[in-house]
Length: 51
Image 1 (spheres, rainbow, N blue to C red):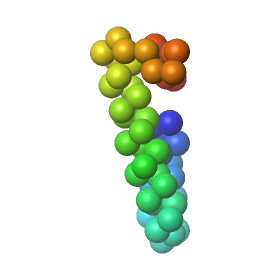
Image 2 (image 1 turned 45 degrees about the vertical axis):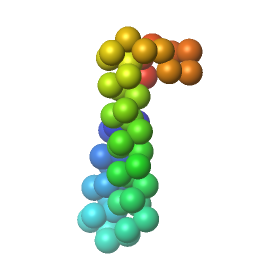
Image 3 (image 1 turned 90 degrees about the vertical axis):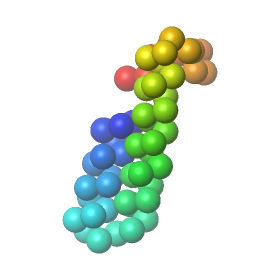
Image 4 (image 1 turned 120 degrees about the vertical axis):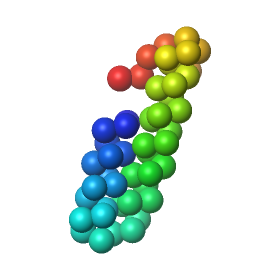
């Protein structure tokens, strides 16, 4: 999710499409939150790691 978010941010910035940039930021933040929770050992939705 983190990589997908970064890709969407880059595409949105280069193509000047604000909705892609916004979606990319949201996906990136959600990916980072899931990554931090997994790194702390908390299982999220039955999964300990999100790759």
